[in-house]
Amino acid sequence: MDNQQSKTYRQFWFVGFMDGEGSFLLMKQSTCKKYAPAIKVAGTDFLTLEDIKGILKENGVPFYVEVRKPKVDKHKPSWMVVVKGHKRCKAFFEAFPPVYFKTKNYEATDLYSFILSRSRKTQKEDYDTTEQVLIENLRNKSVRLAFNDYTPASMV
Image 1 (cartoon, rainbow, N blue to C red):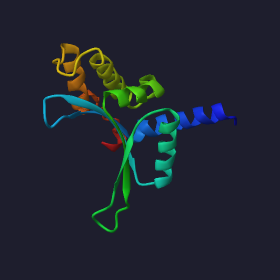
Image 2 (image 1 turned 120 degrees about the horizontal axis):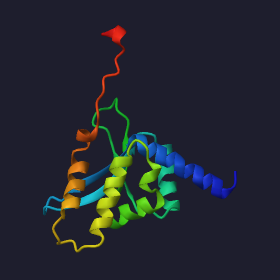
Image 3 (image 1 turned 120 degrees about the vertical axis):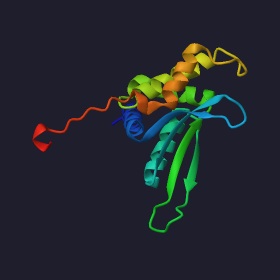
Image 4 (image 1 turned 180 degrees about the horizontal axis):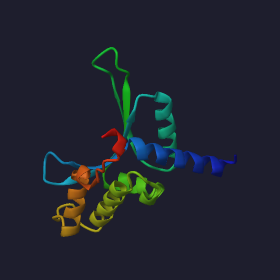
């Protein structure tokens, strides 16, 4: 496998990992009524953390890592990779467009749409109607899920 194929393979592995374990969200600022975009992924395997850090660095995505020690001895230490803020999250989506995601496509698309919309405005401007809908979607993700009962009739 040449370097380009290896990079592409790693990118798609990362997208799959994010699709299962990642989060695309808006975090409410404690000091004002504004929201900051954030992309997070967490785990306990530190080799996976090294892979993720390498992939983000290769793709020019700024991030930071939080390492948490367990409060209970039987739990493993864990880590969380965080990409937070409009510019950093925009860099993430330029490297990994929302269309790449399957399970988290709605969340990724809504977050990127919010970022692009806000990039054309000053920070002090109020949210327009479209942005308010995106905020509502991202803050209430579970509302968008359609829960269907697939229990076979023989089990009822």
